[in-house]
Amino acid sequence: MDRWASFDCYGTLIDWDGGVRAELARVCGDAHADELLVRYHEIEPELQHDGTLSYREVLTESMRRLGAPDGTEHGLAESLPGWRAFPEVRGALEELRRRGWKLAILSNTDDDFIAASQVQIGVPFDEVVVAQEIGSYKPAHRHWDEFFSRTHAPREGHVHVAASLFHDIAPANELGLRSVWINRTGEPATVAPTRELTDLLALPETLDELVPSST
Image (cartoon, rainbow, N blue to C red):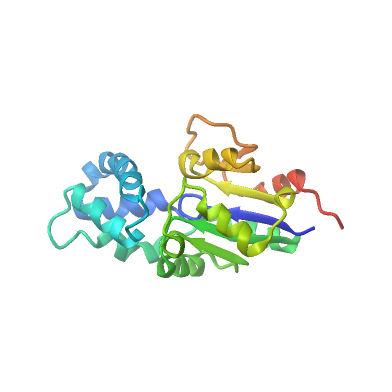
């Protein structure tokens, strides 16, 4: 049986908060960056709700709504390709591939952004599903529908790994899927993942516990 681990990208593999905050600080000043980051978390799902905007458009309109000065509203989109992977990500993903896991990304982003982020991650993925392709943003279920349609991954051999309770863990629960919540910030749980980790260091062992190898 094939074993599949699907991942959210931003916040799970790529330091999304760090990337957004750095650009907000550059444009609006460090003193306001934390407050604006909280507001960004509120604005983004509103803009993604009907799936009609590309992620580049979501980033740009979010900056406008946050009061970015004229001419700086494209800053988030321009900075995203340089956002770095968390330090343990490459080693954890390489170990998963060594253990025979197939890897996928299910991301609320555009094709060009995810291509740049895969370069930052440095590990190949067997499947990638992005919002731009399917006209839908998580927490809607279409990312998972598309993933299973493309890969024919067995549900008993699949685990979803993500940092967002709202975008990923809650819909995984709705779909009856196992999940690993990467809780890097000590956030209180409002829904229950199958497992919870603070980073990806113990992920290979955790996934092997959830889906033991058949070999």
